[in-house]
Image 1 (tube, rainbow, N blue to C red):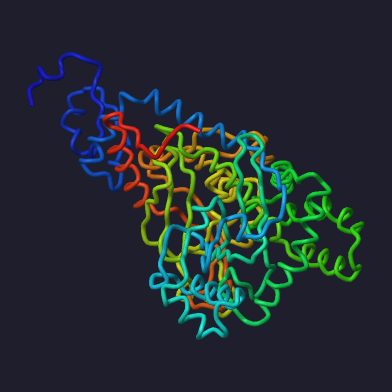
Image 2: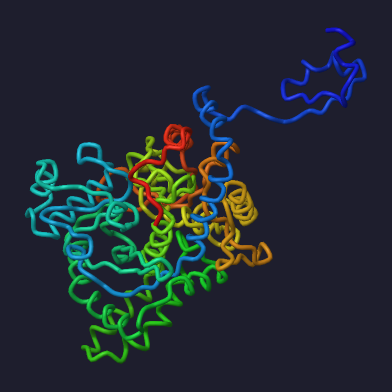
Length: 479
């Protein structure tokens, strides 16, 4: 190299291997080393697309601010209990399930188990073998819960006769739904389908749901945002830990339930069922989160995520500016803490709609305020702080309604930005339960996972293709 090449200017910025720059440094040329690596998985086509989008950065920024603000401004109110057949328009033999679309042939073990149980519960077949045959026959239709503005934990199966919580987003007028939490132990959401599981579902439909409907109506709705805010400051992250949320809900509802004109033994059983189930608030918080993310959907130019969901076979995401299109990749097994007698080899790949919590800015994104959750999912309190702090790097805003005491009441990181996930290489954190890979066994642990990067790359390429020429997809329109 000629010495003349370096006569002018203030120095050199090195973004390569340090040894390459040593000959230049030896000539006393000022050198600044930058620790930079190419974005993992980003090919030339995607780089070209991202480059062309650069001139539209103001539009994208404004759209993301609108979408993220909708997440923050959501006001989810639990309004009612309704039958799923009516609420979700489930005609004939239709079942909703967690995660992106999936067929019976490709379903994971726990989701298949939950389908077998739901078919028996609905009376479409008598016995597990007949139910399995019915599921494989093509007579049963399978629809993602997300496609009906609903969410379900783990297998996420919602059948027509089930009772659903109806949550209205007062800020934007949309409605979201979730089934009711069955309790702990052997339950449908983990793929169990014994007679006890089916009897419990029937009791929830016929006994629990009518009482809850009366109680919610007497309150003129339950403010789930307020309860979640309080729960977060009491050590919950409203995904895997709902101890405070459930306690606050019982405190809200119990006096009203106790005064209803019902059989005292029935009331006693209902209050005991809710009070002894620390996860009862989970399904309600999921519906609250869904009502917020649905309001943030369909904002042209926005790269904010509106869904992260898993069915035990695939992990899928949705992007606000790309409407209802799913971008999927194979689901992975979650690292975590396993119950005795079980290990990672027994685990189903990641499953459930409960990652709607992280999509809306709580759950794993709020772990800084829930150090106790690490005893359940693994790690230690300092790592919980680190997870939340890292998520600020891939989100648009902070939700000050959900303040985190360990971070000086800083709001939770909210509004996952597809572009920032691609550019930083940081994958969204998700804490979750772990189901056995075989149907009917149930939960075997809990852990912390990361959203797979592959589906983000696919979504980013689709976004570039849609918007690089300022062509807004026809199915996406401003709400």
